[in-house]
Structure formats: structure tokens, C-alpha cells
Image (cartoon, rainbow, N blue to C red; front, side, top):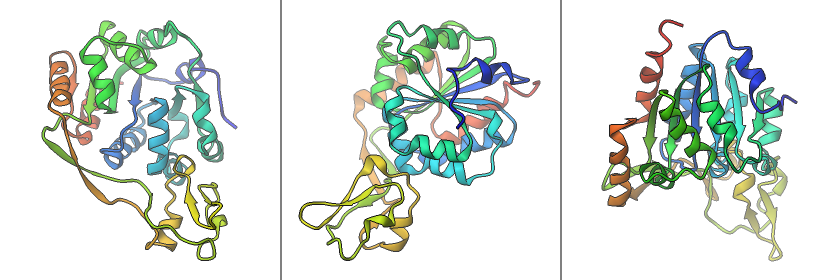
Length: 276
């Protein structure tokens, strides 16, 4: 187990500055965001990933923590922070412990002093917000800082940190996204053994039917591969964007760097580490 105290040990053992990556509850651009995080790691850039509660659960369904455990990475260069320890019970703790990755949970701190302290830490070179939901974007655009992540980004700006964000609802009038694992057909229990899922995301209900417990899904895709007629993944969906959400993203462009796609993140970050 590599659960650690909130942060100091990770920052103190880094020989150069660190990127903070804030991850909120959106699936749009999941694969691209994940690839950018891996790219930073493989280029020896230390990274602290901070998940909101919704961000952790959504990323888990898309296979974020599962894939980290299956990918060759420099584990000492990643530390993960969760907004609340309750999300860890949805197999996230199990996956991180198995992968040997370090993680911690944000302290219960109504004043968000830890977020403010982190935003002002000299070791923090830049702050990324991706994916940033319409809700978080609206809060930033309208001066509301009532979460760990919004406090971190706002105080990072005040401290002169370089900040870039990828708002999921900036491309008016619509975007094309992909869905995580979906269960789209009621099936009697004789056809699918619940033990198929080692993470307990499948169970039998009182009507002898299979039930899919999305919160426990880790996106390993075993069920999709064995029963494609019942489970699916990576289906495309068109999402309509509200004009007010796109406007909120535009309002932030004068203060923060707005990414049109996650692939722009690595070049943005790399420029601040070229001399490290």
C-alpha cells in the first residue's frame, strides 16, 4: 500500500518542478487526456493529479486507474489526490494499491487552506484543468470557488502560475464524445455468471436478471469482450452544448490558456520544463 500523507513527501523528493493536473467529472476527451498524462510521465515530468469526486468515478468507468496499472510508467513521478476518501471504495483503492502508485485524500478543510498552500508552492510550475466540466468552468467564470479544484486554480492564477484548461463545453453547438462501458440489455442470470467481473460490478437482482453496478466498474472491458451483445464500450454520442456554457469558457480566455483539444496540453507544459 502506498497511501501517503497529503503531499509533502512527493514534492520534497522531486528534483525539479511539478505539474498539477485537475480532473473533473466529464468523459469527453478521456482517451486524449489519459495519453497526455502518460506522455508527461514518459518525458520525466512529475505530475500531481487531483480528482474531484465525480472526476474519480467517471475516470474509473473509462478505465483510468485500470489502465495505469497495465501501462509501463515511472511510478515515482505520479501522485494522485482525491477530493474525498469515499470514492476509493469503488475499487479505486484496490487498483492503485495493486499498481503500487502513491495517493492521498484532501484533508477536511472548509477554508481550503491546503489548496491555497499548494497553489502557492514554489515547486508547482503550472496547473492544468482537463477535462473541466461546464459546472466547474461556470464557477471559475463567475468567481465561485467552493471546491478544492476551483480554489486551487484561482489561487494559482493569483500566485502567477501558468494555467491551461480544457473546458468540455466550449465547442458550441455540439461535440462528439464516447461512452464508457454500458449495459444495454436485460439478461437472465443463467447466461452470465456475476463472477465474470472480479470487481463486483455485476450482480443478480430479485428477478433473476443481471444488474450492472456502474460505480464499481473499472473499465477493464472483460464483459464487453465476452458478451458484446449485452455490454458495449466506446460508442460515439453527439452532445449538444449550451450557449451559456460556451460563453463561460470564452470569458476565461483573457486570463487562462484555453485548449481546444487535450493534445495541446503537452506542448503547453513542456515549454515550462525545457530548462529543468
